[in-house]
Length: 225
Image (cartoon, rainbow, N blue to C red; front, top):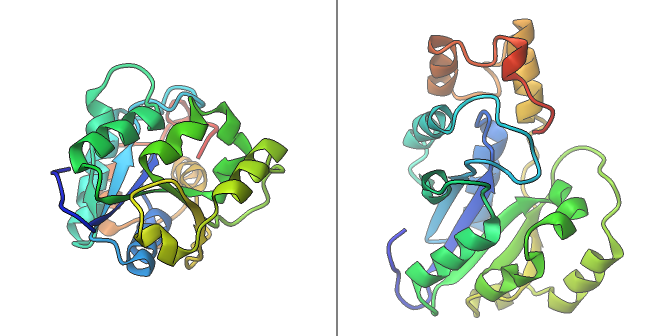
């Protein structure tokens, strides 16, 4: 991302996007509108430290994201993690983004509440707020309990959305979005079984998956969404 001036509001949503689906696009669009962000980027991980090897290459996942974003002009991509070797650590990306954006831009890192139970396993997770705000959106499903450490940390740093707009980083908040009951895990499983997924995958992405025969064999499925 290029450097922005004072009062710019930037959002970034990380993930495997394996594959990207309407749930990802809906959440990103809703958050951008709710927070009145100037930019919202999807940031695919080369390799999540908490997951096994991804079932398809980073190049395929980036290509599918490019196709999805092409029909959503309100969204764009940040491919910085794909250019780094080794595990993709969020803290490294947020530090890079802050250095690029300067001290005046308001940076928001968006993630699903299904990740809160595992937040303490993230590298230097408590330092996220040095570089960005943490914005959490609801995901459908039932998830493990959030650790007391995370709950206490959240209480210390929770801000209203108006307060987020007035500072570059340091706050946590929840944003309500329209829930799309779909996961990448379910999409991969459906494709492997030959079940239709046209209602949850953008047409250009589905065409790409078909063209490259992705997720059609068991070795191209994985346990994590």
